[in-house]
Picture 1 (cartoon, rainbow, N blue to C red):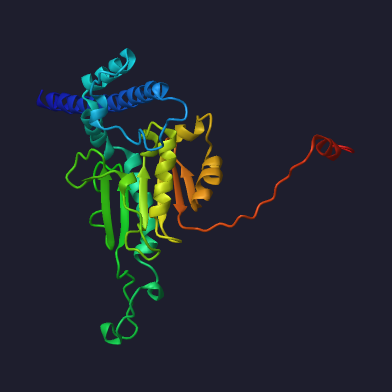
Picture 2 (cartoon, rainbow, N blue to C red):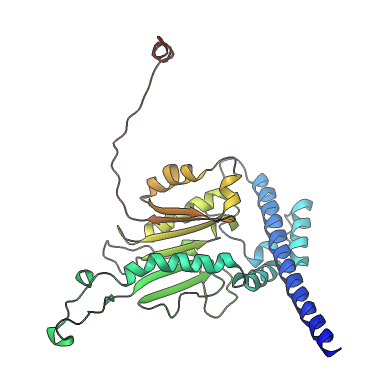
Length: 310
């Protein structure tokens, strides 16, 4: 009888865990749906040409407060957001799911494996020569950098990078829910004043961040700002998006994202891969491009002439 009771207890715990995970996922999905609806309703009230790219970069708790100028539809959406617990409920659900999700562990592993060659470069690339007395002849020299790499994790729920050797990580969010995450607006990060400024970042992580920004213009602004914060010629931008964002988009494909958006920003594709649910794109920043181009500006008769003899 005791064995049967133990078996039932384990099953109940498993069912409770599954239910909690499903509830958290439902909260996240509903929050995104309501935020998208709120952004759409707000955009309809902005006069043509009056939209600013800095608007709706991310939603904060004040966005859910009722205002006298709100339309009935906007007031209804805000009421729904408040009823579900607002931004706090969304972040708690995200935090609950984050480390339980295989995709989170995969993202951390992906970033770390690309950072390792930068953190442990060949001995010839270290910033200071080693004293002959520091190691006996024939001994292997440590391949660690003298100056730690700077990493910025945007929209982070927790700090995944502390304890990773020779790395100075910062995790920021507009509404941090964990003590290891700083409160900060990514678009307010100060830009480096000189090419050799220590304010540059060696790595910037945008993991499941761009898809949470409701305004397409603000998403572009975030990529532009990231490109300017990366150390020239060596900074890495890690972008993780839900695969559905690109697979099901009417306006954007992976090829267009790389060619039409990234290259003008001085970002060059290093690698790209997809899992069943996510797309991982790694870009190198600070790459200069020239203006060489080839344009075919043909008239209709010239185009028709090309088909003669086919």
